[in-house]
Image (tube, rainbow, N blue to C red; front, top):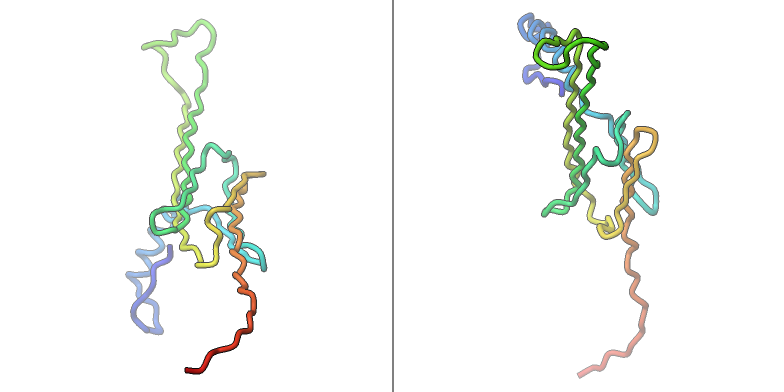
Length: 150
């Protein structure tokens, strides 16, 4: 998330620029997955870029306010095995061991015309696609009738 400046100064503020530059590497490491939202006449489509993630890494739900909550959580641990003949218990030291943990949550406010009973999702090629079908407007039949005058 980018910081918003609340002043309307034409000259850059040295301390703000220095502070923003110092945080730039930290911001890059905490980037959220990219999301695309599109629509056509029949549905809305939400796409979440999540390379290397599978369907078991996602949790999608409608909360009590009927908002769509997308959760992603993945834990990866890479271990290098001890060479043959080395002790694997207390005397073995790792020269390299990598851990990775990713957690992300996004809440989307749904439009009123979403058919909440028929939402579906699929993960293919590192992209989570959520289809939100639109409810078709109920067309009441046009009935002509005579109105009695009292």
